[in-house]
Structure formats: C-alpha cells, structure tokens
Image (tube, rainbow over all chains, first blue to last red; front, side, top):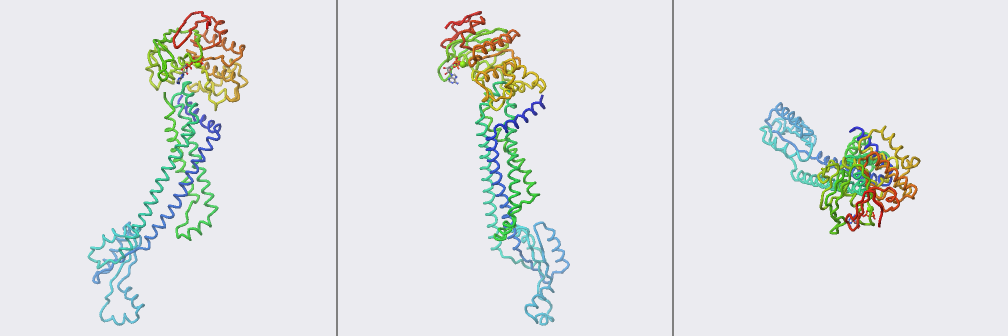
Length: 296
Length: 225
Ligand SMILES: Nc1ncnc2c1ncn2[C@@H]1O[C@H](COP(=O)(O)OP(=O)(O)OP(=O)(O)O)[C@@H](O)[C@H]1O
Ligand SMILES: [Mg+2]
C-alpha cells in the first residue's frame, strides 16, 4: 500500500510536470537563473578570496637571535616553528651567512672584522599562512630566551588585516543576501505554480485523497524542478568556462587573481551539491506553498 | 444511514438552510428539489464536510461527522461518491485517469484499476473517450466522467448534484436508470434535480426545499412546483 502510493505519487508528478509544460518551464528557468547567479558569484568570489589570501604571503617577519645563542638550539627552535600550523615557511640565516651577505655588499668587511669575531646575529625569516596569524606567532616567540628582537612592520600588517577582513565580510554579506533573495524567488515561483493549480488540490481532497497523497505529487514535482535546474546550471556553466578559458586567463592576469576555475571535477562536485540543494529548496517551497491550500 | 438534525447554515449572516431535519435510511433514493439558490448544493457540501453547519448535527453511519478528525476526513469522503454540479474534474488528467484517481487514493492495485475503470466508463457510455482530457469533452461527457468517478469505488452513499443537468433527455434517463440500479444494490442515493419528468417517473422519496426549509417530504412523491 505504501509502496504503491509512493510509486503512484512519483509517476503522477512526472506526468503532471509534462502536462503543465509552461508552468514547469517557468519554474525551472527561474531556478536555473538563480543557481547560475549564485554559481558565478561563488566561483569569482573564491578566486578573489584566494587573491586576498595571497597578499598575506608577502608579509613576513624576522626573528634575530642573541649572539651567544648556541646554533643547535636555534635550529631546534626553527624546527618547532616549522611544525606550527600557522607557519607557512621559514628561512634560516646563520651568523656566518649574514657576514657573507654583508661582505658582498661592502667588500672588505670580513677582513676587517676577522680579529674581533662575528658581530652579526643569526636570523630566521617567518612566513605565516594568513595575515591574521602573524601576530599570534610573533607573540609566541618574543619571550623565548634565544630571541633578541623581532622585526616586522606592524602598520602594514594591521592595514592588510583590516582590508582583507572587510572584503571578506562584504563578500559574505553579499552571499547571504543573494542566498536569501534566491530562496524567496524560488519560494514564490513554486508558490505561484501551486496557486494556479489550487483547484486541483481542492478537488483531490474532495474525492478523498489524504493530505500526503495531495501534497506528494506537488512536492516531488518541485524536487524534480530543482534538481533539473541545478543540473542545467552546472552543465551550462561548465561549457561556458571551458569555452572562455583563454579569456578568463587574460582576465585573471589583468586583475592579478587566480584564474576562476570550473573544471570537470569542480563541476561535478558543485553539481551534486546543487542537486541536493535544489531538491531541498523545491521540497521546502512546495511544502510551504501547499499548506495554504490544504486542510479545511 | 444519514440523520440531519436541526441543521442551519449561513453564509456571511444570511441563512441558506434553516432547521433542516431529515432521516435518510440505507437504500433510500431521495430527490432533493427546489428553486435555484435554495441550498441543495449547500446541503451536499455539509454532508462531505466541505462546509460546516452553524447549528445542528449531522450523523452519517451513526457517526457525528463534526467530530471526524482531520486525519480521517479523506477516509470518510471515500465512502461517499459525489457528482458535483460543476463536475470538478482534474483538468490535467484524462477521463480514465480522473476515474482512476478515486481508486488510487484508496490504494487499489494497478490491476484492479485497469480492470474496473473501463467497465465503469462503458457503463456511462464513454469507453471510446477514455484518453480525452476534460477540455476535449462536451459538457454532457464531462458530467458522465464525474458520474463514473463517483460510482467507481462502489460507495455506500451517492450524492448526485444535478447529474442530468447537461444531458439530453435520453442520456439523462439512462443515467437515472444507472443510479436506480446502483440503488438497487443497496447504495443510498441523494440526487438534487430540477428535472420534473425524472422525479415524476421514478416515484421515489421527494424532499422539497423552499426558502431554506423543508416544505415537503413524501415517499413516492411527485414534482410540484
Ligand atoms: N461560499 C458561499 N458564500 C456565500 N454564499 C454562498 C456560498 N455558496 C452558496 N452561497 C449562496 O447560498 C445559496 C444556496 O446555494 P446553493 O448552491 O446551495 O443553491 P442550489 O440550491 O444548489 O442552487 P442551484 O439549483 O442553482 O444549484 C445561494 O443563494 C448562494 O448564492
Ligand atoms: Mg446547486
């Protein structure tokens, strides 16, 4: 009985989709456009975001060690830092290397200093994985007994931090707004589609269909609509990106952002997410919409 | 089978039915007559719980229908077959599917449906129009689909609101004979009609409404206007 009903509902919704041709096309088109907009926004947003992140790569700071700090302890210290998740990269300069570098800039230094010993400090350049982690890494090392001082340009770092944060917040806010608008648009499309068929709902109830038997086909239909819109938007986007690949490379070069990518793998993954999302969105919309017509 | 006790119904603040009392036994064939707008359809809407009465009680099969919970209304409606005055066919379903729908909602198997529906369509003379959608059928044909749908699950009670209103007198008479046959198998039939000839010919119980009240209730009655 349950399986028969389920099967009937599934079949009825397919037939009904086909017979309500224009209504189905309208609903799918609207959802398709909504998904397309969201997708484009997310793809470009992601690439823009990684561009912002990469600004952080250019920021680092340098730890200078006390001149009497034993080199094996310094190297040990470097190793622990390398294993810190917030640290992206380290570069060690020993006292001798520092002297060499200076000697290359001012030849003769080495000879002059030979009798006095090497006054240079060993140093360690640190790159953190995000601009935000810079501060916390710097703080964690500054009281180490080996460390003489830390040099980094605080102002630049703060400015960058503020800038990236603002941009990310703006991006997230836009995304949330877009998502809300998308939801409302889909909800109202489905609602309108169901409203035009309210007599059908009334009749079904009058001839003794249970609420679920009435609701079922409409919900499943909206699920199909959502899933089809998701597949369409993914496929269209995939081919658009593949077709305009060279233009996108030029564009990304121009704006110094990574190339917005929508390869096969990304397309399949995002397609699957969207199908689930589209189906869920359709189901929820139909559920909400049909509540107004069911149950007297 | 059906007991209507002191029922009044108003739309807005205008009463259409006032203090209606009727006792309809199982197997009765009742013709409900009265001028247009007197409340015949309204009475039927009360019986299938499409509307609620403002005063009074309605018992069907011994059960006070006011207290049927929402979850059981669908099941309740399935024991009543209704031919609506405006047919209420699903316009996205063809004749076959419209009739089949009444069986589908009660969970009949596909095999049963394939077996029963053509027979019922043949009974109303529409075996060759099974694939037609309502907009491809004439008024009389739509009416016959509506009748087929009301009969298909062999209801205990059949409400027929103007079932011959769109039919020529010959087809109309055939439908009446069909209703009588169903009645002979034990189904209680309540039919609203304007058709004087039919009422006079069948010579069964006649309930006449006027100004929202029952003015006449006669077994083997005639149509007097
Ligand atoms: N939903 C409604 N809201 C307000 N008034 C209504 C409503 N339904 C019916 N009425 C009114 O109630 C009265 C009775 O209507 P009803 O449909 O029961 O008449 P009827 O006896 O079936 O008439 P007919 O023979 O023309 O079918 C009419 O005056 C009608 O205008
Ligand atoms: Mg009427």
